[in-house]
Length: 508
Image (cartoon, rainbow, N blue to C red; front, side):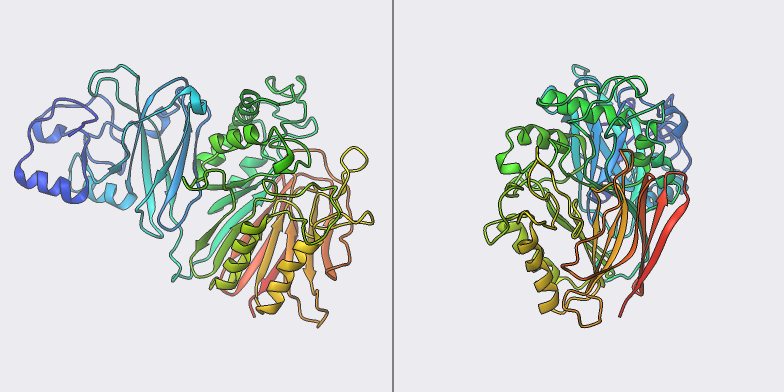
């Protein structure tokens, strides 16, 4: 059996059975055979473990930090990037398993582990590693073990980083949770400044969210970041895969973003600036390169049968189901007249959304869309056509497809549908009553930017008969949601941590 430190003797048959039953990796049998490990043990780990204390885990081999993403009740995706080629192995177990074995005085760990994986230039030395067969509502601890290529046996194996995360509750469990969302990072000259880079991420982290939704424009690949006042490294417009990768890597230079991603799970989708302003996927030759860089730099679970698919759903207990839309990859040209052939989602994604909403048994059904429902957002002379769901006097927009979603909500009498959006660089919240029967049919909350030019305050179009709760701008911000079976409470918090808006939707 592969060991993290050498010098162990043969195990007894009883020990072998115990190891097999618990899928145990022997990490350093120092107490049993009298061979010591040089690294100190950490509280909660078995005596003699080679895992070093947290303070010593500032690994230069992982300069972009780590991230956990696409969390479910039974799985997660661990993201990392190494400096140059490395052999990588991840070991994980529940925190309780570590503590139990530590209390027994054992130097053995009940850890599952991946095969040895390699980072390489083909993916810019990044890896997104699935962690599966997890238990719902359970706190896990993982260790990232690195080895230099060419090392013999276990020589040079060492723990480069560690982290913890908690899986979501299963669909039968009602459990309160808190999450944050926002988008629009590093645009219109407001890029990384100083070591922390984007301090708003520390503000988000202080809210102790269960997860963070990064709602598009994770980079502004088509905008310059001149230095000064910004940190150097992004004063170019990305057009190639290498340049898109460089812009993602530039964002990870922000210590505050790394701190958030190392402690808070993330769900990521894209909007336009991961490729080019207001792009329509089937007609944009740069889309494949921008999409590849996005998938390489974020912990997004992929399906071998459809490796480019970004729309997906996740269930969190009995109270919440999230539907993450891809509003870019399949859309028609913005300048096309609206009508039966005009689509933002594409047929398969639209069917997936309508079927998922209808089948969902969650109390709150949340549709995560990078562009808002009702804010008229036209591209002007250089970029004709409306880029969001709402249309305008020129006959463009995506209102026909939006109406298909609205009709499904009304026809199926779906309750507690919430839209979360971004993109407009201002704050807006609307209650919609499209059938005008006096009963609200769904809500929309728009947040952002994280760090970008502040947008104008624009009234929502009247088509869906909105009642506007807030419509303001002038500050960087994020949305914070607290979900229970009884309520869906939304706050908007600015970059200094000050609440600017709050509203509670009650279950009915």
